[in-house]
Length: 80
Image (cartoon, rainbow, N blue to C red; front, side, top):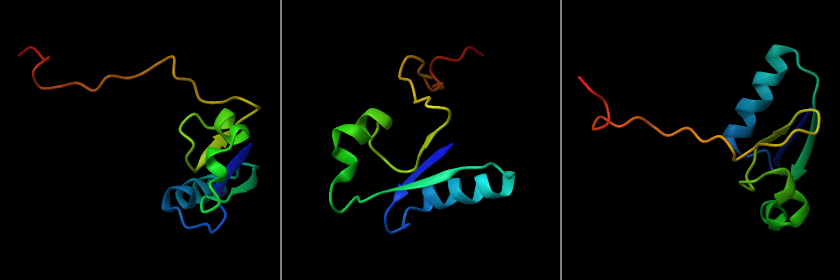
């Protein structure tokens, strides 16, 4: 498993992912992305992360998919 985080470790979301993996005892490696240098917009990272954001977690080479989207429920579409 590979966890991409920002080079300064400033993202609270990356910290949550990091701590969660540690607490679960999951083996993972960390790769940093320099957001100030716009590394998250580079082609190689955009192939890994469709949103170009950190944290990004890659498991066995699998990447996120946009094929399944969940539509939120609205109060207007529910029947009572």
